[in-house]
Image 1 (cartoon, one colour):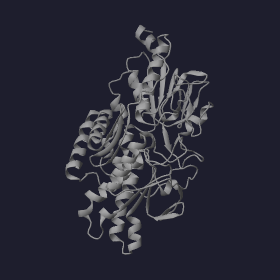
Image 2 (tube, rainbow, N blue to C red):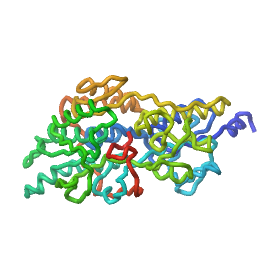
Image 3 (tube, rainbow, N blue to C red):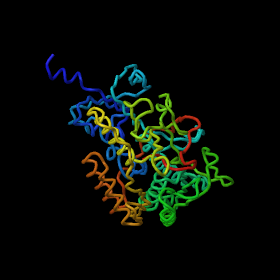
Image 4 (cartoon, rainbow, N blue to C red):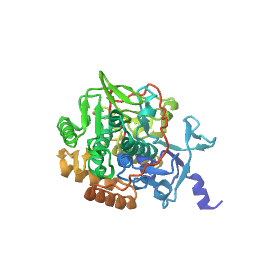
Length: 444
């Protein structure tokens, strides 16, 4: 055996489950390490989740916010991509079992499998109110939104027409707020001249939040500004009203019943089931409780990052399920693997909060960045710049910039295509809960 072949055999194997922000960042952070990386994902693409709502609202196309994982890692010689679904993890044997029966042995493991929508035990609501976690969800929401106007255009009965032109969004976190503002502005600015029998600008968009405020993590000042900004463009904001029933043609808010044919879900999240099968402690929504260095208790070779991880060691309670958390944790897990290989002490994870921001519509946003609170156009420019820089692929940055510029100048987004099938069920684990105990937003 040659010296080169011997060195390759000696290289430890790092299996990364999930090609999202955390998993992809960990893989790229290990690009110079003497390891063999196996990145496993059931999708062939990395998805920029913070802009999923813009695909759902027909502002962007799927290819604008997604890039093939193989393309992203094409120059990284120590990385191999495996398109497969992970069925189970055997921590004792250090094996990752795939759904097709294969098994991947590892020396180090990074679990970055993410989360999914939670309906708080009301699984039947998934068919009636799709969540927003992947491209399929975004295209389904786009289909329902645009199809509602087509149905209203052909409807003779005024009551039924009003049902088609009423859109209820459940959850006042960033996803719900951004979706509500974008859908209302499309109905108000983009569609009016394209229909002859209906007034699209009179479409109702109702944002429902069970808690006392939308964007609760932004602080009361920005939360109030967000309500004012949404109401200024015509969004109805309902606070302190949990959804008690979702039906084919209506939603129930306590004593109030809102007739509608389109309900969209941005309220709760739960960890994917993979974490619950590890045999280690999890929190009430199935996230794995990790050590300060992001490893699993009793298994220093295994790490959990991103939406699947519950990190209870810092101030302020659990970390939010947002992209910066996953990115920083992916970097930390990779650094601790390298430290172990170099026989150096590991470092505890410390989250550096870079702020929060959400758009309210065309040229309007709220942002809390570096201790500063921004609103209106300056906040929107900050939101635009930061999101462009976070996009992984340079091509995506260029295309998204020009799509945004076109939509801003013309109010005519070019991705208004109705594609996809009919309603589909999205079952979730019963009993999943929001970590804050109230309606919120899916992890971004």
